[in-house]
Image (cartoon, rainbow, N blue to C red; front, side):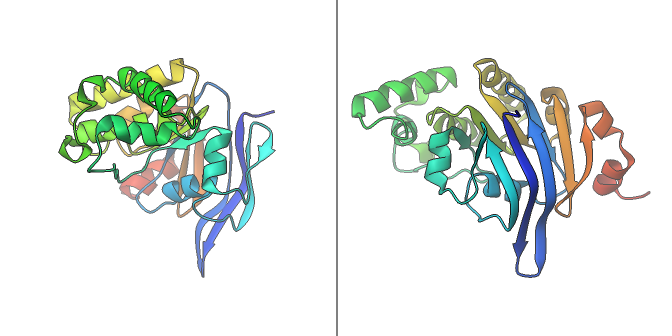
Length: 237
């Protein structure tokens, strides 16, 4: 049994097919990449997995159970956490308070939420920012806070949506190390990313989609050298 899988996942928006018959499987402990040009349907796949959009057809199966029709909070309770491409922290709250709000997914105790939040901030190397207002953070720290908020829900599967966008080369390198650290802690990861040297260095396997449907899958080197992938990103010439 696969740890996570989508079977013929499809999403229509009126007459537009945003995701078209996408199937893939992720093994426990894997870092699985989902790539494709802008507008190819990657974030829509994440939104279908996490219940933000209803599925038109197909199935999402996690740890042996079908997730179709479940609300987002129940999917989070099942153990799937995610970040968002556009980070929107609770700007007038502190870094610690932001992470505590996510920690309440697993506890009704204020002390329990605080303890979990402090543990996650330490893990993400944000403990020294715990009393900062979120609105005053740099883009690099806001991205790291977004990951911390997702980790505070205690996921066993983490969906990362372009966590490297807008970061400096050093921040990207630090982000890669954090993602590896998360995987080494026992969390399986599916990552959407446009920065190719990041995705190629991180992932065990990659699925490339374009116009909502699969065009290639395999190891990073196999996908990087696939003619359909090169054409999708760079054109025929």
